[in-house]
Structure formats: C-alpha cells, structure tokens
Image (cartoon, rainbow, N blue to C red; front, side, top):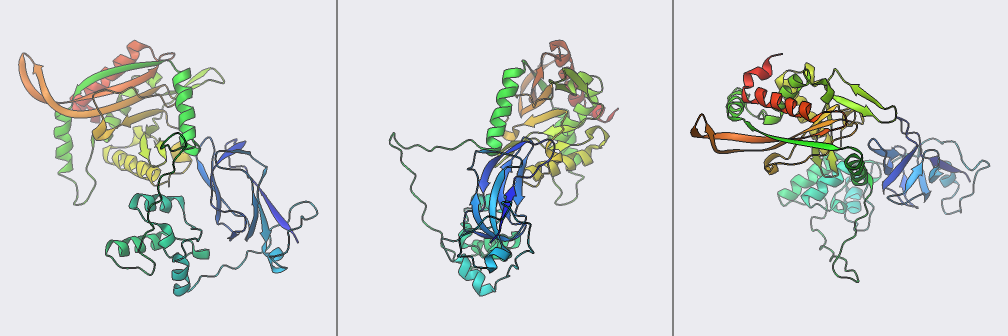
Length: 422
C-alpha cells in the first residue's frame, strides 16, 4: 500500500517558509484533487494550498501559528489506488516514502435528497471557501445547515446565496433552518476571558507595524483644508452619474491631486531599500489604498495612478478595495505601492498619526470633513473643513519638504480646477 507525501511547495517570490493559518482537513477526511487542504500566510499574502491528488488524509503537520519550511512534509495522503486495496488496512510507506500521484478519484455529485441529508447532519465537516465562511459569519448563518452541491457536498456560492435568500423569506431551501443555540462563553480560572492566538494576517500586520514604528523616525504633519469648493464640485459631478452608479467620494479627487503634487516632490514617492542602503524614487505612482477588511488592514494598489483620469481612478480604487475586502485580491494587487492613502471615512476624527507602510517613505491620512465657522478676511463664514494627517520618513524627507508637499496638496484641493491641470 502506497502513500503520497505532499510537501509545502514553493509559493513564489523567494518564499522560504509559510505560517499555517487554518487547516481545512483532518486525519480521516477524504479529499478530491484541488480541494483546499490548508490556508497559509507568506510574507506577501494568504494562500490556499490545494490537494495535488485525491485520497484519504492520513496525517497533517503543524498547527495554526506554526511556521513550515518550503519542502518539508505537510500532508500524507492515502491515494485512490491504496484505498481500493482496502481503506481499513494500516498504511505502509512506499519504498522512498512517497508515491506518484494516481488518477484522481471520481467525485460523486450527490442527489438533492442526499445533499439535504448531508446538510442536516450537525456533525458534518463543512467544505467551502474562506469568502463564504466570512459571509456566513457576517450574516449569522450556520454553514452546517446549508446543502452543498459541489464535490463531496462542498458549498459553492450559488448554494450559499440560495440558502440566504430562502432564509430571509422564511423558507427551508432544502435544509434545516433552525440554528443551534449559541454556546456559552468559555470561563477561565481567572474570570471571563477569551484568548485569541495572533496568527496569519493579524500577526503579519502586527509585525510590520512594529518594525515600521521601531525603525522609521516618523515626522507627522497635520494641516486643515477648506474643501467647500471641492464638495461643490463633487456634488455637481455626482448629478451627472447614471442611475445606480456609485457616487464619487473625496478620495479619488484627493488621489488625483496627490498624483499632480508628487511631480514636484519625487522624494515622497519612493522606497527605501534598507539592505542596499538606497532610496528608489519612482516615476510611476502606484497608489496604495489602506482598506479595512474582516481579516485586518490590507493595502491594495492602484497601478499607474498618474495615467488615469478621474472616473477611471475612482473605479479602480473601488475595484481593488472591494477585491481586498472579499479576499479576491491577487498577490500583485496587494504589493508594490509607492505611497499610501488612508482614510477612516466617517470615523475620521480631527487628526490621526498614520504609520508608514514600509518600504514607502510617506503616507497621507484623511480625516472627517465638517462644516464649522471660520474667519475669512475678517468675516465669520461657515465652511467645510477637513484635516490631512500625514507621516513621513524623516531620514529621507526633510520636515520642510514634507510641509511644502502638504501645502501644495492643500492648494490644489482648495482650488479644485487645478486638480485637472498637469
């Protein structure tokens, strides 16, 4: 009887190890080729590792939070050939400890009745994607109650959406609709506590933030901007949109103004290569858009922002942000920004101190816009004001240059016609 020993593959871009975020299988489970075995986190992105062959899981290596080197044993799978000889027999190692992949096991697409019975089993293991798990969590849906039509009862997008629609109208949708009672919170000996292991993206964020704050001397600069005219322009442009089109926000206008300003301040559109001790200035503006997601903060990238007109820029900012939130962003879409724009939206507050997204040397923060009384030429007037809170790497961007850049950005925003001038 042979075994297939699957080793962690090279995930690209010089990856030498990956952190286990969560297993999708356990010993005894039967998997089909391309079923997701485990989600891992590299220094670049989260990656779902699929099964290379069909078979039964004999053993897995590592727990969530463990680092696994590339090339080390990850999963041992009893292949289809071995199972046909008798799945109940104890596995025996092949001569070299591994077998080549056999033909994939056939995967039955069960009948509707069989799928309903499977969905009704409260102890079954749920097979689905991380995106669907997140949507289910947000909607309060127990995935054990959803009938899956994919291989081995895997829940696909259509299954989830059909169940959610049926649930909202009070119909069964072919599965049990009652949800189990919530489990009481675990009690520790020292009182009511919850321990959450810091792994995956949250660990990576924590590490990068700590490194940036420890290694980069931040120079913070806050300036208030009168965006009354910008707001007037934004509202006018939104009246020209087709019915149902997304409204224009401040961010694309601010991004376009930033692109224009960076032509005058190239030292702020740069990376610091610490290993070589070199500042790399970029002619292209690859704009990072700090985006809050269910997994933590991500920075999807708008490539070549300097070449995009306003509406294209707005659409691309929206697209990459949505891709990051729904876990559909590619590795390329989450790396390579040259300067980052961050906004807390309606929670923007008066001022903030954003942390630089290394190896970049500058980050521009946007705070909330509010109407308030200001004095203009000796007269009190109501104007819409907004603060820009920015941070710069003081090793490579002098305080004077940082302040001059923000002042130039302020001038463009307060006279929005200049945003569209080269």
